[in-house]
Length: 264
Image (tube, rainbow, N blue to C red; front, side, top):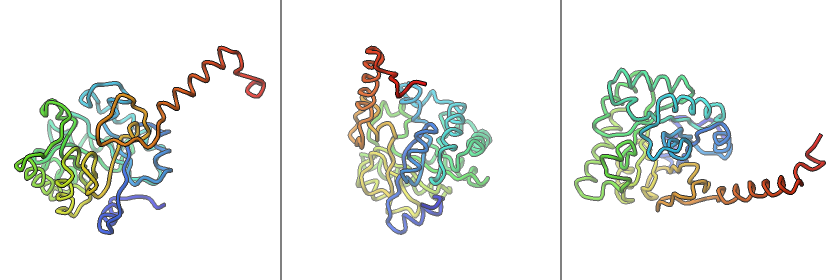
């Protein structure tokens, strides 16, 4: 497998070849998803919940993103590495956005992702103008969870769907190389995907996008309390992990571990 680049993703869209993206937040998972053959690895600010224990992504800081991006970059060799810009790292000014995006690139990311439509279009233009590749994010944008009143499907009305299509075109024109579409109706996601020349990556947006992304903890069944409709568990590592830990506890208490094979 050759190294994935932004040009590779465009070629995949043109060839109707689905793009596969997964999150990773540390070196070990980064190695795993990269060796498995995903096209894009995302260091998402979603790490705030399964890794840091926050209720939302809002508390995630630039320091958090820098440290996790550095760790993931050490494990990724072939996939394109994208890092999220956390809340308040780009909203305050173009200068702050450039500085923080540049720091993430210096930390190992090859592109950044930021949430929003029309309101961030000028910021996207500025970043791209400085040579910083940008992935957009529309629909359910988790940093706006308080504005939405919770994690709800977006774009369900005719007006809302028209606005999302319009904003997707704005982001494309501003220079985004790809856009994540999160929790919007499948038909709308398909319509947006067909209207854009750049690839779309869906999460809870149906099968009409140019690619798909999941949080690695959800994909591998490591979050027992999270059961949204759009998540499919492709493994059950929480249950397997519990079994392994319980077996370890039993053997230690029975003094059967360590045995002669595991002693010097």
